[in-house]
Amino acid sequence: MQPKNVLPQDDADTGKNYVKRDLKALTHKELAALVEELGQPSFRVGQIESWVWEKGASSFDDMTNLPKTLRTALAERCTLGGVKQIACQKSQDGSRKYLLGFNDGTSVECVGMPSGPRLTVCASTQAGCGMKCAFCATGASGLTRSLTAGEIYDQVAHVRDDFGARVTGVVMMGQGEPFANYDATLAALRKLNSPNGMGIGARHLTVSTCGIIPMITRFSKEPEQFTLAVSLHSAVQRTRDMLMPGVKRYSLLRLYDAMGEYAERTGRRPTYEYALIRGVNDTEEELTYLCDFCRDTLCHVNLIQLNEVPGSKFQPASERRANEFVRRLGSVGVEATIRQSRGADIDAACGQLKQRLSM
Image (cartoon, rainbow, N blue to C red; front, side, top):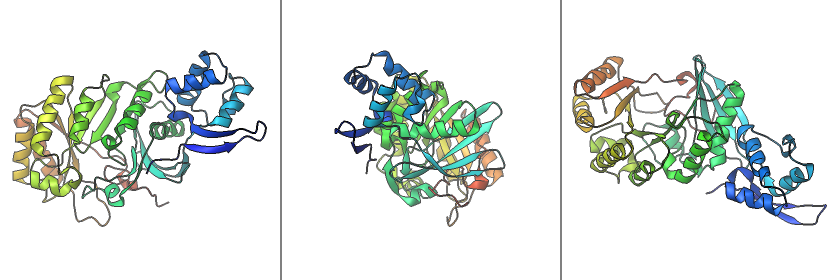
């Protein structure tokens, strides 16, 4: 189900019936056409985009360098979207998890993670998720709908404003499968990267996918240097099929080939995300297959001791086992690190987001 971006609006003064459009959903060309239709000079387009994307205007009245007649006309024809904070939790490590609501009643979670002068945002690309990964709380709730580019961007803007700090990096690792919402995800990335948006460097904008191969191939052909992370979680087909049923149709052999083509075409090092689950994918067989899968390829392995989810049968692997994975991967020339999860005490870490907060 797609979000409702248009609303009928009766204008009492003119007697005209406008269909309101979300201003953030308009392309540059569409906005230029609207400005021309309203009889305004073309430089107004840049002013409007600055208010929407850079300054985060919440009302047309905020756009003080626009004539009042233009502000009124825009308000008659458009909405500004935006999000409403429903709840916020603060972690002992400084991270903050937000439950944000949109105009149609849909809600998502996102996370702000400060580290010294840096602020990284983990944003959602869908409300819920349809991939049904066995260890993930988000997948258990199912998919509500995909988000628009503006709704993805607004999460980052909300975190920026709440911290009162510049966002230096964004990871599309919140709720949802970004490549199941490819066009909106790419549009949001481009606006986050744009100097007319947040101006975040492309290499500090990361997309995480379960491994939808056609979209990995498409992503490799994009001109920007966005970063790619692939949720691997096992290099044994039967184990991966059990853990990640949403990508069963894409075999590990096909994924291996696609990632090789990605690295060759872009020259960029992708990351494999690997959540270590005790007795499931931390065995000697699993480690041997993982080393074979990654050996002689351009990649980095990000090991995560599984974040616990209430009611789940899965438990995290030991720290000793995680260190052994790092050692063995290093012995075959594969760089691997153990990622320290942020916000686990407020269920804000990877795999724990599920569209509700207990306040």
